Image 1 (cartoon, rainbow, N blue to C red):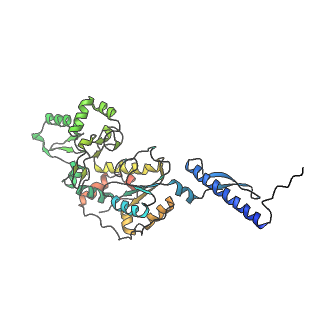
Image 2: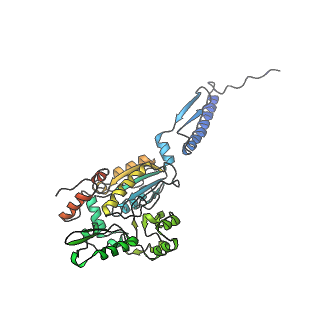
Length: 369
């Protein structure tokens, strides 16, 4: 028996050549699709592709834009109160909302301390963190202290550190003891005495309310309630991290949002001495997001810079990071932001007590008088 030779699909014949090209194209597309799927599964950005004919085998590296467009699924906008987050969130939703999730949260709502969480897919989120000039931000919080209901309607001195003056001869040690006992539930107070006045500094917190008191009673103590509640308090905090813990005490005042104070971010249950201490810890927490497993990239952004120059550079950066084309026109710049009018003593106080090394990490410095 004689065998016919196997047809050569790689001859110079036009039809055979076309067949060869089609085989190569089909195999290339199939394996390319597999490669993209593998890269999403975390198996790397390379894969072997075997082609038919004289081209042999080679390794194909996915282009950076291909990787980004398949991995990034969300933009998360972070920022403290009065930092322009509502303005920019609305804008980015118009720009990218049809193709990406534009969120005002990561592991918690945009204003609060964030933490690493496995619920966010690895490297799936681009984070933009908004910051505002510290002098303007503290004054804006003084004017309208969102969530901080115990700091409403105060002078700037009372707002940053409340001072209650008592004539020394009208106050005694029993009174001091009474304050300390009372504050063991509602918050720590630092007491110092001089020959004329008793100075009481109000920390950045408000009192716990009825539902929290019932939780504490049922648990039998502070350590017990912290263990029993775990992260079931408001915003997935523990008892030692937030006031209130109970959603029943998470009440709202029109124009001031819901009552809530974050406590020191070390689990100690202590209050921040002042709002500027909270700001320092929040800045450092937001910056730490660049190391969280779900974060593809982190971009600190000044409110003043966007107001002055517009959003073109922000939008372009997000296009590059996500691989998506913005479906909006950037907002045009409006010029230099007019700072809030504040007393010279306020500036002096800020210059003395703000952590300027931390502020420098996001591009802010002291004002001169």
